[in-house]
Length: 316
Ligand SMILES: [Zn+2]
Image (tube, helix red, strand yellow):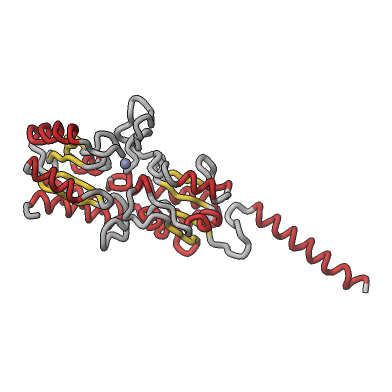
């Protein structure tokens, strides 16, 4: 009798000991599900996470890719995903500033809050462009830390992938060798892709463009294109008639041949402005998922190059 009464107590003690050991292992947040739970802010990072994490990770993605990157509307499904997350992959540089930090707070998951160890900025180590001399949000500035649209520069994929792999290895050291191996193979693919795109994109060198939003910098740097201005007077500020009149004049004077806009912006306005200065409108995606068939990070880079080349070749 005494023995059987002791057993449940002993069993409970063993369970507690086992749980506390699991809690000490950084890679196992939930004893029932050993997969690392990853939430990606945008589909670009979801694609990278699956490529690098393989079967060791479970990946949820928040944005569909069709939204404005700076203003992804919250859906009810976001909070439970964030509540369970071990790691939250972001572009960083405040790209997701207006929607993600507040959701991460709301999810009551201390680990993935901004500036905590589970909030991962994949822009770390990227050579940041357009860093303002005065840091301010006074006028609704969406790029206070420099241009956050790193994901549409083919040159940035390898660094973003390395940051994802490092985050996985830190959290789940038992999988580090696998993450490194998968990341090395993926990065080799991305480097080959970048090399090919650079060759195919050679005709774009020196081409002058105006973009709707200031999201093109990494893309134009990669292909040697020149940005003459943006329809938005500042990132996130609606175009005004006066600004567009001045920009049209500058655009004509500079021989701008393309007006580039993204999936979330008014095609009509971009098209009218392009007509006004004798240029062609070009729609790019500034996230994976932005356009039909653009479901991987590599496909996004490919799509954007082909869209630019098509505009160069003529036809509407
Ligand atoms: Zn932006």
